[in-house]
Image 1 (tube, rainbow, N blue to C red):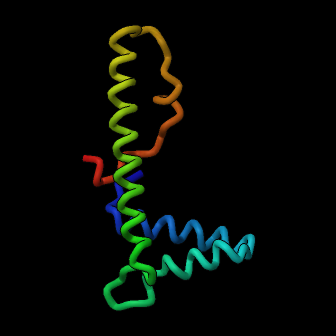
Image 2: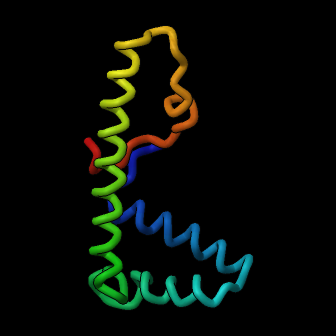
Amino acid sequence: MENLDTKLAYKAMFRFLEKYHALTNADDIGALLGSMSMDVFRDAMPADPAMWTDWLEAIREVSAEQLRQSGQQAEGRSRDAGAVNEDVILRADPPLASDR
């Protein structure tokens, strides 16, 4: 899987929620999609500007968690090279482009 920039990752998450909404017709997801829509304005930003700010904050939080986990995993490997770290096995997603 390729690394995504912040805008492409946002669009992918939006598409995921659109598909979920199509299956469930959940009103709360529909309202969220209305606020998140990038098709409303010419600058291709969300209808609710706070959505983009919140999205960037979420990326920063996840990036920081990933860095902390990477540091802890490296520390754990150096202490016990024979132990299997399940987090490494289970986490298959590539890092975001902003993580580099």
